[in-house]
Length: 576
Image 1: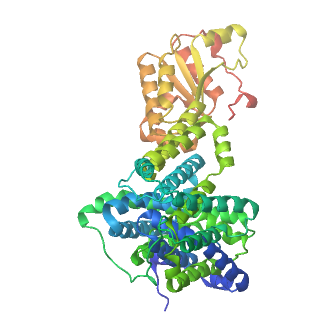
Image 2: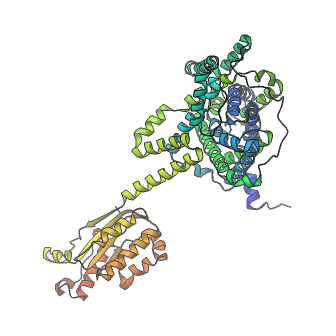
């Protein structure tokens, strides 16, 4: 007997891996395993660095790369996506760790994961594409600046000062360095960053990050210097799952960060998957499955002491460039990192913090796409303004406010641009078969306006002011066939205009009201008012005839104009 799962169960089943995914994993296993090994070598210093930057330690970054990387690889919506800790996520997590500790990260991660799963069930993946590009570029630039500034204490070899604001912490770190300079740490950080940046330009296929970190570690051990502080002892293996939540009274203050983490995970993961699609042939990610996989990854990673994760563009790009074609590569990357956690923890613990700071400084520099920023700045003033405001808000406040500010400014400027497209133009009456004398007489009593574009809240009140100034006529004809959209505010304003003109003894007639706009007009009572005494017409020539008839009954036109008028097919109103 077939059991009905219901709509939620059926939707959940559709998000789970299927036979097709298993079949694809079996293709070219050697090539995908080699790609996974390469990505793991690139990901190791990044995972360690982002774990340290988050405030939870290097082991948290490794746990995230292993647990989240494996789950996202199996359940995600992209065959070549690689997930793990990222710099953008550490920007959100630093203040959470400072205020609530590891338990706050667990609570935020679980909540964000549940939100991502809910978004996947609601098919919200496709809506992420509507986030404006200047907002994405702006907070990417801001995040790069924050990541770079976060590395200043470790790069200078000074203890990290207290505080949540990265600008304040950086300033105090510079003051501490001025009192007690540590040039060894500076040398390690700059050397690693330089090797990564120069090496990536000349030989992009070589993982210079791990080579530079190994070299720095060897030099530090041979020299026996204590000036460059190392990571410290790491646990051999993943910690047991833990459910240490924050005090229930603090849950309210963690809701906004959880929403920020979920939003960031969704945006960054879907952006990374889209980039991967463009780098491959025949690959196409499923946005809802990607949200589902990231949701499971973010639920599980904090349970093992990790931090929330996202799809990582840099690691995904390396995965694609080294020949990955299935989920096996990303899964192999997580397995290799797990082997390092279990087998090489003592060696990893000797890596100087300044070397990891150099890795993240180079990563921050490489996050900034100068070409994209230049193109966005040249596009329009609005795009440039959105980009700058979002970047500054990310740096001065945090990512939550940055995204909100960016979206609000983008929405406001977009509405302003759309509202400017709406026009109210007075148009001449079609002479038809009238003589010049008759047409001049009609023009003394009738005025016609054509409304072009959207009639909505951002533009409607301007029409009220313009139409309210109409004088010395008895009939106003509103040609509405070119109204692209109308909302409740526009309908109410139109109704208000008609009522005000009627009170002044001016009759309002309309033509060309589209079928899809009748409901909103009817809902506010505007359509009933426009239909009064048969004043709504399909075409403008018919509305002009109706105006003639009204003026004749009012005795404002001589009987000579009351003869029948022929309406040619070409005289009927057409859109455009």
